[in-house]
Amino acid sequence: MIDECLSPSYVRDLAVRGYPDIVRPMNIGLRGARDDRVVARAFNEDRIVVTANGRDYRRLLAAMVLHPGAIIVLAGKRPETWLQIEAALAFIELHPTPADYMINRVVEVSAIDGVRPYVLAQEPSRD
Picture 1 (cartoon, rainbow, N blue to C red):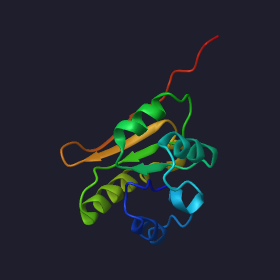
Picture 2 (picture 1 turned 60 degrees about the horizontal axis):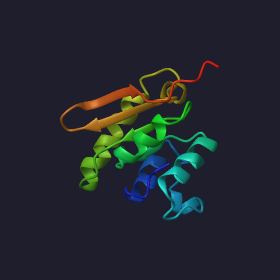
Picture 3 (picture 1 turned 120 degrees about the horizontal axis):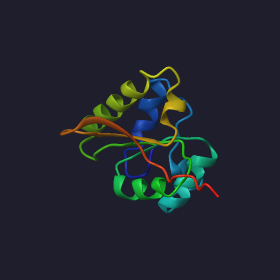
């Protein structure tokens, strides 16, 4: 799911790259919805969120025990942001089962750190 803070043209670009079921919140009845509603929908549909809103999405995902993952990029000019998305996808696609790899992970891309994957989720309670 491409967050609304990023260009809608990434939907087309990702479809061409082999991700034909990519959506934006506005295409599924969530235009202008709060981030927690977008995360809930992504969870229910087992979708990875691609966003430039790292601060809010990190907080929301860290509160979950299980989530399908996120790609966080820096919002900038379209060509640079697209290169960040491609770098994240190239890294994720190195794994034998990319969707499984992304469970509870964030892949963050920046000019300084490059591609940086990390686990982000609440620890399950042991009651």
